[in-house]
Image 1 (cartoon, rainbow, N blue to C red):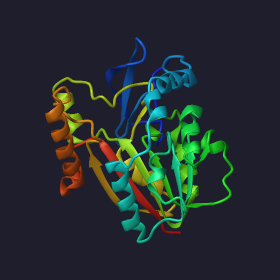
Image 2: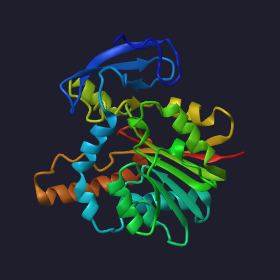
Image 3: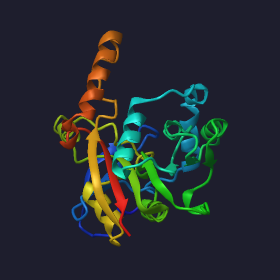
Image 4: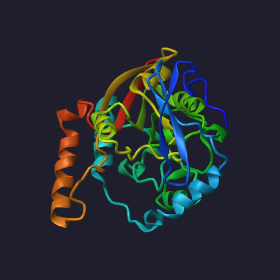
Length: 285
């Protein structure tokens, strides 16, 4: 397979090849590309011939613990709900979560709200449906929605897609005027990734081919705002609850996890330290 000659996101020819990245799924090292124009990084999804549907089904089969998990409120989703209420200055009447898994995020909103999800795993979707949620099990581009939503969210989805640009356009079209588009992606521009690189340690978010895209904040802003329909209203980065050096020591694990939760909620999340980037856009026309 020939090397890529242009950026997969912005089509710029100003790209360079970085160190190859070992896949956690196959015995193969994927080339990592860096676009000097939009500042994003990416892999070539067809560098080797694989069955993506099978790979994701295998991944889903390894997380079957979610299928039997009872719903309970989660600090991360409570925070997201509060941010949404503050930015909208009201409670939403409708919300669409793309890549909703079992619907835990949607469950944090009142059942009177039109709560809609998109989830390709039928196993996860069935759990959400049993919880009373309206879950579609198809690619978003194949679903004919008869409405727009006050909130459209896409948490940890875009990094997996072989062609993310059309999906970003689909997400934008589904947002009402004055509504919010929320995106969460792994963020390679943070201090954590830079330190790991200096130490010659592979960043855990570099895991091709399940992760193919590592967007820069510049790319996301340019892509969402390109028609002048959206404005960036809020952003921050967190550890995602992943950074914890005391996982094998139960008491310290719990204490440090609580500390990191409050750290992630503090003013420090405005500094580019950790690798979970949340961006919020408002539709202005």
